[in-house]
Length: 148
Length: 340
Image (tube, rainbow over all chains, first blue to last red; front, side, top):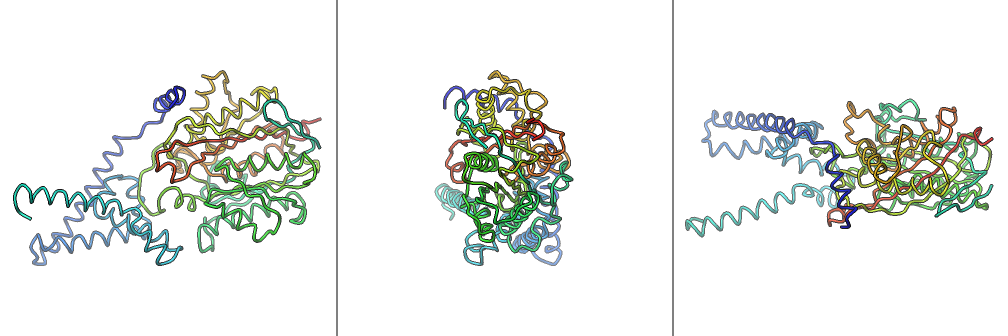
């Protein structure tokens, strides 16, 4: 990069309007917290139905994914994330949003090349690197503790 | 009519006029500060069209109809359609041509497409042979989002420098018949790459390209900024205009009140959640074809320099870490009465 480019990029950083970091952090805390509290309520519901905490986890996940998908379909979830940022993206409802949004968007390109091919266009990297990380951590655990 | 090359690749012409313009925008643009000045405002951004792509074609077709009817001519009078859009293979412009059945030369200069079409059209008419050209550009927020960014319903946060692709189309009929607005000069842009890599900050990447074209246009036509009532860039937005003022100051060109931007003017920044402002080929096309053409016709503007700006990247190039090459094309327009 020549000197003029470097100087211009430096000037760009100086004059760039700042991101509202603190406001975003507070919103992320509130939105993420509310979603997790909702998940907790759902889990308590299943525990109250007589399930153990461990057994209540899968149905809780299913309900939260369903909620995320429903709110995406109703056009509400993108507004939640717009406010809440990572507070809305990180919980499993955000994962549901990342799956349903491309499915809705690309249905005009058909069931196979549209929905089928594009379904994982946003969530794909999360799965790839999530599973890769799980594999590495599992291998390390086996190496150090002998427990598979 | 006549055309002459002035200075380093600018062209001055006489006897070339904008016979009529057409501007059609979506509901968000209609609710913006310029909403009253567009010819048609859609109340729904897809209407009954089955896809966003077809909706954009519909938008462009309506802008064509408005421009042709305001020019007082018919499709058979159009010798050549010059235009483009943002989508891969410029499908909007190409597919709309299935209906109008007039000769088409498709163009691409990203968001600078409109002044490229208008400038080339004026040069062709001035050169003789071709009598009437229809110049156009269009964009649709939802078609651009899916091609360049994310699905509409995906939640994510946009930084303050992100632009909002306008749902808008603009068209202008250029010909020899004396009309209210004349094309005086054209400067085609060079590709300038200042090293910007952030597709969420195209304003600062494009500002030096706008500066380069404005500087060359002023030098070649021996004019100064004071000679223009308004210099409108295409879609630098709030931040890009600030960068252009700063860059101009450093390079010996002090912009005053005459400098404005189509994208910045299109939306109410605070209440419409559009961050840096409008962008897309349809942004400068519709703002010229609607509000600016109206101001020229009504005498609120006498001489206008329209400098549409384009960021010439694709999703592939920025994912590969390439910087963003930019371009700007300038067209100088004047109220006919001022020609004397």
